Image 1: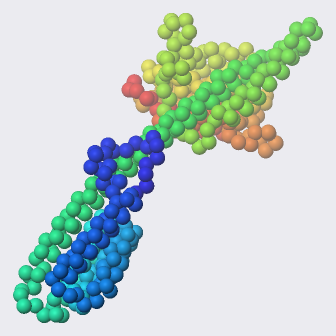
Image 2: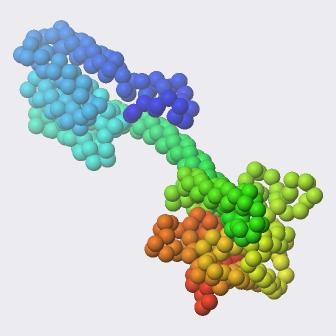
Image 3: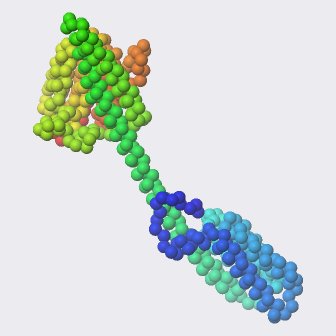
Length: 422
């Protein structure tokens, strides 16, 4: 069993658990059993010699030592060690001084049931039983076989029970460690996902708010170009336009750097990114981005010379999340018109409030070069951050957003489910 790395969460261990883990993995524990078993076998041989001469005592002493040394491999090859020790025990009983090698197979049996798989355990038990039954049967017994097998079976059951308890405890601890590791990994992934979602939301907000304002500045400054009759003012307006364009390009680069790849944005949180509520800085309680902000958006676009009409049917929901989403969709649509719709002179914003959702439609009469479907000659060949961000947000709450060419321009449509009952 591999040691846990520092900092890894683990199930609490008792003193017995720690001692058992050390005994299973330490070289000292491995050799301690071998040395103890070797001394035990030598004592048995000495006892047999005290009772009378033992034919081939040196050879059987060497065999017993080899059998004991074979126990060094019981952790890696438990079944092979069990078979070897069982054969040696049977041979000693058939052709040697008697049943003096019966303890090493029990040690191997314990290792087998502690570490081996089910198939090896199923093979090992019949092998051990055969090693105990065949020698007395072949030599002929003067007493019932059951009397011979009863103590062996008793000790075998005790060994198997002890091994099963040790194995069950070890596997329970390992399973608990695995669960804790899985929970820790899940928590890390959740934290990474939340961070990525927040980063994507920051990128979307940066694109939507700053991008919209810079686009409006560009449109307004272009509308004023050459109209003042004063060279210094015209130069200042041209500088404002140039700086706004540079700022818009820098904003897109910043959004590219912030936007995580393949991150779905969760349902819109009614709270803004700083963790507060949708309130203005003055503390008057007016929404910062929501239903009340729509008129300001439309007025900004009207100042660029584009006629903007708002039609609305039904009753607005009081849900702040829906209001914020409608604001973001309208803002992004208006920004795209000012940025991409060449020759646009009219925009119609339609809001249709139903019982469970709000439909948003924004139409223009320009030759639209949308960031969702750019022309081949445009420098941007991938979907824009604004609509991609909004499509993810709306899709997560069961809505939909799509944009495409209409009969006389471009049209954006969004279905935004109400996040709270109306």
